[in-house]
Length: 297
Image (cartoon, rainbow, N blue to C red):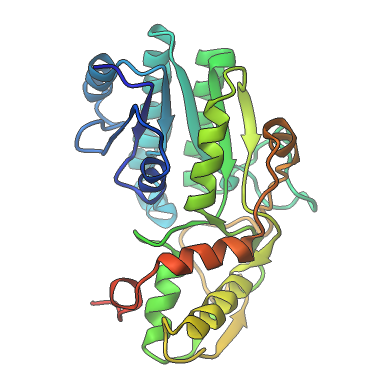
């Protein structure tokens, strides 16, 4: 039986949100069923479900680990996406592919528009850019790339849940305050992506995040204050702002990767939800036992 849409990466935080907000006729597949590193599984999934559109939420997202295993990131984010794009092109299918703000170096001095030249500064960003190029070149107007940023969810592994777990122990936190971007809820992003699928002529590259901007420190402070007010943690623990240099990591991060979403906002007739408002919606979904318990190990 054919599906009108097939979601890849259904086991991830965005994939789960996409399935939760999907209309009837959508099928979701996890990596065990459709693996970007295994072309035969992708071909079988497309033959079996025969979708009109594929929404690709599958990706290698371990930014630092990509520096140690560039081949792994390339296999998923570049070659795997290229294979998927080619299969979609051969079958006359549309492909909506989710990408990242990390294709930019963060030095532009203003929010990035979709037509600004990408300049990735880490392995992850470079692999995602090559995946974008494959979608746009192989599918033309039937290929849509939507870049987003700083995703978090009530589930999975992400910054919000990490901050809640650490805050639950009662100790002080140190968080980077010189990287700027926009925290984006998978709940709001999923709704926008489904709206985008209804526009059959929406090819090319676009940007979408929640509204506004902050730093990781600003995001952490909002998480802790609002979680304490909701009783998710006992108290709003102190947070110290630090510089990127004080928290060295394997992969370089863009100092400011805020995305300009105005073109897609006009096209879809949707205004982005302020990130603070989106955070409240996610916190409503978070349970103390499930997300704020101290991390094991």
